[in-house]
Amino acid sequence: MMPITEDWFARRTWQTPDWTVEDLIAAKRGRTVSVVLPALDEEATIGAIVAGIRPFTEGDRPLVDDLLVMDSGSTDDTIAIARANGARVALRTDVVPHLDPVPGKGEVLWRSLAATDGDVICFIDSDLVDFDPGFVPSLLGPLLLAGGVHLVKGFYRRPLRLEVSDAGALDHGGGRVTELVARPLLSALRPELAGIVQPLGGEYAGTRELLESVPFATSYGVEIGLLLDTVASLGLDAIAQVNLGVRKHRNRNLMDLGVMSRQITATALRRSGLPDTGAALTQFVQVGGEWVPNSRELDPTERPPMRTLVAAPDQVA
Image (cartoon, rainbow, N blue to C red):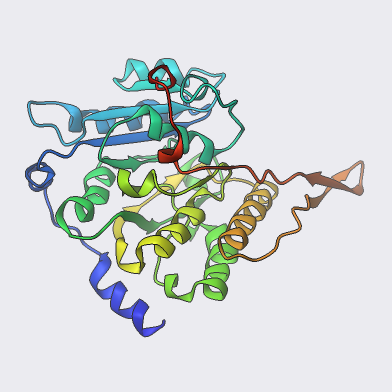
C-alpha cells in the first residue's frame, strides 16, 4: 500500500473494538442516532434483525433514537413483520413524494435521509442471516468517540452460502464483486483507498453532515460512490473501518453480480471524471441448448445531495 494508506490503516482501523454501549451513550453528548434498514421483500430475515436492534432503543438513555425500515416496494410480509418487531416503517413513495421513485438500493438510502433526523445514521442490510446486533455499536464507535470521522465502514469474513442451509457454505468466498471489480477499480483510480477491507459492504455509518452533502447513486453503485465522494470532499482521514466479525447474507447468482458490477463500474468512472458509454450489459443465457444474448440497461440516475432539496414539511414522512 501507499505510505499514506499504511498510515491511515494503522490509525483508522479497529480490529477489536472494545468500547461498550455505555461508553457510546455517554459520548453522544446530545447527538441522536438513527438506524436504517433498506428492505425489499426480506420477510425471512427482517424480523430477527429488527428484534436484535430494538433493545438499543429502550430505556431512558437509549443508544439508538430511531429504528427505521425503509421499504423499497415489498410485496411480501416485510412491512408487517418489521412493525410487529418494533420498527418504524417508511415507504419510498411517502418520502420526498414529489419525485417518483426509481428502483435501486441507493434510492431508498437517499430517501431515508429525509425520513430520519439522526445526527448519525447507521445502515444495516436487511438480508443478513444470523445477525449480530453488535454490528450497531461497533459501527457507531469511531463516529462518537474519535474526532474527525464522518464515515465508518464495517469489514468482516464473508462465507459463501451455496445452499439455503449453512451446510452448503464455504468459510470464505463471499464478496466476489469486491475482489473482482471494486478492489481492482480502486487500485487503478484511487489507490489511497486500497486499505478499505470491504468497500462495498452494506453495513456502515456516517454523519448527517456528510451524507446530506453528497449525491447518491440510486443503484448498487451507492457504496462505492459514497466512499469516493467522502475522500474527495473530506480526505482519507474522514473514513474509518471496524471489524464486525462474520457477515452472512443471501448470495446472488453470477448474472445478478454482473449487473451489480456494471453499476459499480459506471459509478466509479463517473466519480473519477472518466467517460462511460452508458451501454447496456449483455450477458448470455442458455435457452433450448442454445446461447442467446440478454441485455440489461444501465440506470444512470443520481440523486442530488439531500441538503440541496428545499422540501416542504409534508414531503417528509
